[in-house]
Length: 225
Image (tube, rainbow, N blue to C red; front, side, top):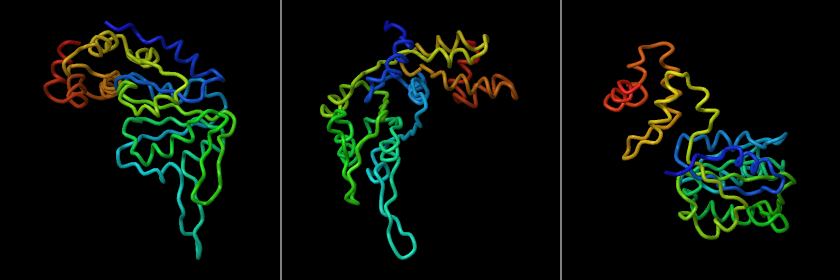
């Protein structure tokens, strides 16, 4: 059985000034995105995007858009983060298309060489403090080698964030932790249990489980709670 996630260690890494490019892997509902958007952020802005195979690089980089009788350049979220020295969280990075990877590679270079030349002709260099945190449900081995080589740190998330567990009442906390460790498709994320708790404030608890997990699984979880 895998050890629980050392969340204190993860927070330490995210808060380090030496950390620029991070990969966080782990199953859904463990708090990867929640942590990436908050821990060690300081006074930086934080942007968040979720990739699909259809996400175009232009959505992240920027594009020309009409304004009156002319076209003007509009920065995308990635360029905004670079200019500000902000943090950008990229969820589902394994879904990045070749187009998006071609955008990421030059930006995720070392601090001495990272830069991106825009279609406008301008070359943008990441401002001090710029940070990229990539998350995915898959292990790092499933990512392209060129992308794997660019991460400063690889963080393995195997258990839910204690902050999420603490938000559950005593009634739901123990069964939720037990259900998270089930196998063969029976596993449930803490996110689902948090939603059950919200529903249960205004409806029958059995109905809350049905609403979140469906008829069969919801009934099973309800009777086991």
